[in-house]
Image 1 (cartoon, rainbow, N blue to C red):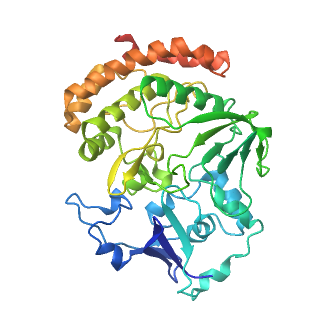
Image 2 (cartoon, rainbow, N blue to C red):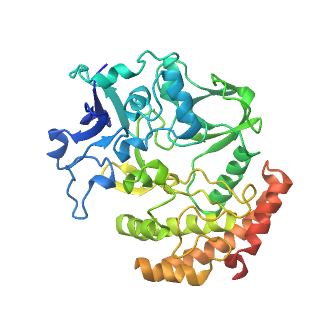
Image 3 (cartoon, rainbow, N blue to C red):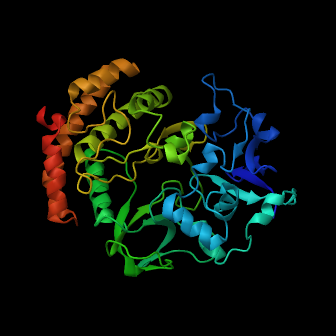
Length: 404
C-alpha cells in the first residue's frame, strides 16, 4: 500500500493526496493541471473570483481536505463500510482508498504505484478488507444507498468491478415510507418544472446483492438514475455545495445560508439558474422539506469548465416525521417554513442583490403550481393517507400558500 493516492478527473491525473507522518493529509495539484489553460473544473472552491486556480493548499489532521472528505459516506453507512474494510471510520485517507473507484462525479482515486508506503501510520490498520468487492458501491451521505445496475426484473448491486447507472436508496431504519415520500416529492417537483432524474420504486426483494443492514422501516427502495453518468457509462463531473464552500460534512447545516447560495448561483449561472434555485427553494418550503442542507445542492459540469445546477435530488418532506422541523439553512433571518412569505423573498432580493422580476415571478408561479398539482396528483402517489394529510396541512398553513 502507498501513502500517496493519485487523483483523476475524467481519467486524467490532476493531483495527489499524501498521508503525512503525523496522520495529516495534504492535496497537491499536478503541474500539468496547473499549466493547462483549458483545464476542467475540479471545484469552485479552487477557483478565485478572477478565475485563477487556487494552488495553495494545507494539511488536515486525520480528515481529508473538505472537497475529498465530502466524497465519503457518513454516519452508520461509514461505520459499516469501515468495519467491513478493516479501517477506522475517522481515518479518511484509508476509507477513500477503499471507495475511490466509484465516487460521485468524474473523480477516481487510486493508489500511487510510484510512491511505496513509508509512513508508519499505515501499520495501524488492517489493509486486507474482509469483503473487498462491496466497498466501491456506496456513495456520499448518511442514507443507506448503493450504486446499482438496472436489470430486467430488478436492481443488482455489483459484486465485482465498479459501475452502476442507478442509485438504490433503502428504507430508513427510523422513519416509515421514506422512499415512497421521496418518490412522490420527486414526481411532484417534475410536474412543477424542477429538473429531476428518473426514479422508480422497487421492492427490496427484487434487489440482488444487498448486504444485511438490519431492520428497515419498509419493503420498498427508491431507485434514482445517476445523472453523473452518460448512457454509455461515461462520467459527468458534479460537486455538492459543501464542496463548493469548503465545508466539512459535519457542518452541512451551518456556515452558509440560502442567501449565500442564491448569490453564487446568480453570479455563476445567470437568470436561468437563479430561477431554477428560487423554484426549488419555494417548493421545499411548501412541501415541508427541512433537510436541504449543503450536500443536497450540487453543480453539474455538462461543460467541464462551466457549472450549472444539477437535477434536484433527495427531495423528501420531513414535516410528517418532524412536525416542528425548520429549513436546513438560514433563509434571510429565519428557518420557520410556515412564516416565510413574499416579503421575505423581497428581502432576499435586496440582501443578495438579485434581479427582482425573475425571483418574484418564479415564486408566484411555483406557489400556484405546487398547490394545484399536489391536489391533482396526490391520489396517484404510493404514500399513506396520514403522511399525505400532514404534508397538505403544512402546505396550507404556510404564509406563502395564504398569499395566493
